[in-house]
Length: 221
Length: 220
Image 1 (cartoon, each protein chain N blue to C red):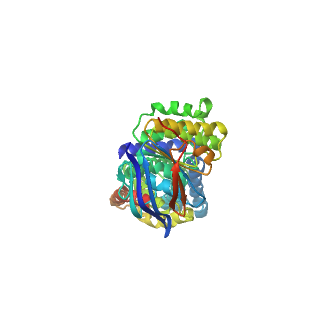
Image 2 (cartoon, rainbow over the protein chains, first blue to last red):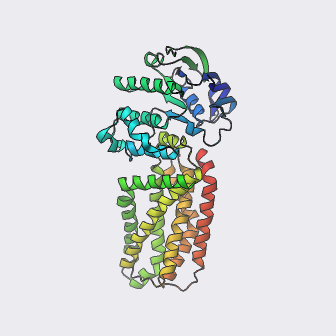
Image 3 (cartoon, one colour):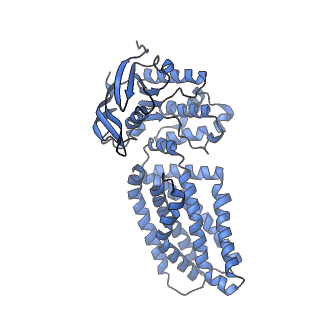
């Protein structure tokens, strides 16, 4: 199994403030990693760096065999990021949002209905503008976007937050399916009771650095 | 680039067709501006006809600022912008797509304003080819400059008020050239058709600038 993510003394600044102050991290391909830490520990900044949305200001960062100091075009398409807000177009329906994303990354939109159904978005919800969906339903549409796009790297920012029990179970199932299919999953969390059992590796962050790491509860044959 | 441009343009137009913000807010604002100009000038047919070129273009420019702000808001909040950035679309394609959608909206706006001018300002078109050329060329420059300056103000707290301050002075050559073309096409003045050349150059320059600059502007 190769290395999907390799960070050495990675530094990222917002203004002059180091949101990442020298992160050392190695994550194998096809694994699930949970990142724990208090608010302001640098968890979300780390996900944004891994997605190529936050500039690398120091150190080395290789993600999916791509140097993040010069990621080049096409890198971000290999990454899927689901944040607190799934980042959908409010006036488009769930179906249209996914079809737009699929066409943008040059993938056929044939899996859109299947992905939405897998995430429980069916029937009239397919044709409902996103602005009329509940917060939980929006998160499900965001998850469906990842399922349809099948990125090589899944970055989930507190995927269990503000969700009902059924959707939390769904998140766990989707993460397991993605990792089994070979994707690498990195998820931040404030809810270790949900995130640690699904992880191969548990990393704790504080003050913009990795302070501890240990094995998680996921067991792969 | 053209694949992404088509994708963005169809998304923007689909959202506009659904939300109808331009239809119910931008177009009425433009017409209202035109009618208020007419009220301010008074019921003098000769004066109305003489001032109609400038008033047509002023109404179009003011309404275009609203249209541009709506086009920028279609991109959504920070999360939606980041989700779009993750799709790694060609920045030049995004720029062209947004321009294309705005051009469609601005041309429709021009047609509504033209009808208003012909109706309320005692104006008759005598040179349709010149008028059509100017009404086709101007939206290209108008949308290009607006999208460039719109991307500069994106994310700023004062973007709504900053955009008109930045873009309206830049659009002055377009206003002058468009008004001169309109004046000649409606027989108000007898100037040469060289002003349509100014429109073409303005539009070409800003279109090229946008294609080159939009990526760095968005990333910054």
